Image (tube, rainbow, N blue to C red; front, side, top):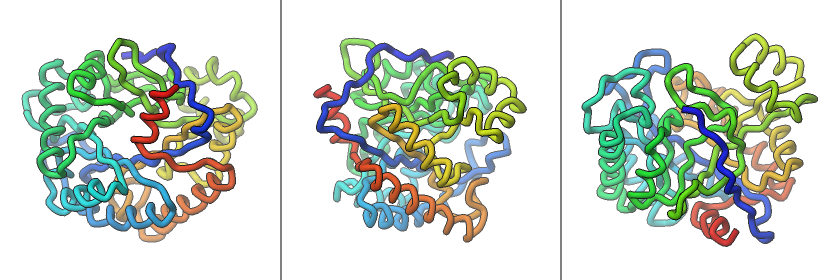
Length: 328
């Protein structure tokens, strides 16, 4: 499914300034190289959510925890999320991993790991089951959503509107998952927008930036780079054209600061960062395998947040974001 950029960009109010949002795909641990399974996962990294939350509060930002079914069923995670939601020091949203989320009616495979590929009735049942579990276990009814694996489909936005969601953050701009049966976001930029229709649903994409000498020609070259990994590697290594998502997972602080500067030069007013919660403990993702890499993970945040402060980019929470977009 190819996602096109709707022509309803947000024109932010002048007093919105430049803002950033930190989001966490809060999920179980599993083998990233193995086939999808509906059982056999763990939630060993859950205690580290408290460490990250304290770190975030010390730096003055409120994380958004997009949580999936395995997390909401974990008693420690539910208690933590209930506490931060009540204290309003973080926001809780829905993160749908269909392969671990009841009801289980589909085959567990790569195609069906994108929730938007499921029959609409099943996608809806899984969405509502998770939303209600969060309501019952955490004490808040979430109204923000991010599809696991960024897997929105042709019915997703209508389902979100039907069930009272006000924000979707499933789009990863300039990435194409169609080779696995997922959505193609190559034509979508990082600017938030309203989805078409009389009922408003705000799309808050993750932020991806092109840097390099050829970045103004990225629209012509990006598709070639996505299709041919060797071309992509040459472009990145030569610094002619480099795709940089705002994440500590696989992206250096130097690259991230460069991407921030490019985004601000292009007048992007909202920067959205993301990572996967299992990276908060060594050994669960390819990005944080050792304690030294975990220390580097936190150093990354310190360096990047300091750069944001230097560039006068301030944190924003979801409520502020929606209010500002509604005034636009």
